[in-house]
Amino acid sequence: MSCAVVVLILLTVFSSAQQLPQTPPPAPGSPEDLVQQGQKLSREGKQDEALAIYRQALDKSPRLYQAELGIGVALDLKGDYPPAREHFAKAIEFAGPDSRVQAMRSMAVSYAFEGDGKNAEKYEKQVIDAAIAMSYWINAAEISNELARIFLESGDPENAFKWYKEGYETASRKSDTTQADKNLWLFRWENAQARISARKGNAKDAQQHVAAAKAALDQANNPDQARFFPYLTGYVAFYTGEYKTAIADLQKADQHDPLILALLGEAYEKSGDTAQARDYYRKVLEINTHNPTNAFARPLAKKKLE
Image (tube, rainbow, N blue to C red; front, side):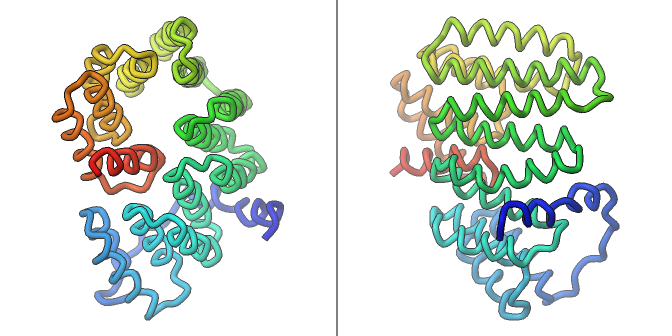
């Protein structure tokens, strides 16, 4: 399927997602009910049991995209990445227009588990292009940032910069953006540049962007975003070799974020506290979400504990 055709298919996605009617719960034993059972098992970390349930759903409904998607997720969480992508490909094929975005982003995340930003880009860019075609600038900007983060954590700061810049500039195309939202996007852009500089080992430049990010955050006056600042300062401290500072700041950040937990584990390990490091790696493996942050953190934690 060509990129142009995919974009045309996706054009209805964002508008159809505006008002989704509530649907009744699935009938017990139906394929949809089995998928929900599989999702619950997967969230509990019981991936083999989830896979068995998803396959029962496919026996009853061979083109059920939710079951293919669930199998892909469970296989990724087990570390079986190439087979997972075979099922994500089927999910993309079987999904309706209102579900294809989820399937394509899941495929991108699957590549993120292996640090493969270039292949993730093939899927994320199609979603971005579809959003831009509909003038959904914020949707496009957010996916651009998601792709940028995949590149950054995959060790490609140059492509990370490219896509973070694309996200910032795309968000600015929204004509009715408030000044507070402009400052919020400026905070995200400075935040990104600080992390990129830190990954390059440029501590001075990173701190300048941290200061600019803090100024933009203060101007945005958005308390919900304030929780991301300790992650930024902890991230910069870790990648510029200030491990004690990294630990202190990251402990103030979201302790449900697997990447933050993984960074804490690494910071403790660099500081010589192996026992604490292993505790944090174990906490990472207790999280069974299929998203970019877990794609970065989970393989690292498994490797460290092995």
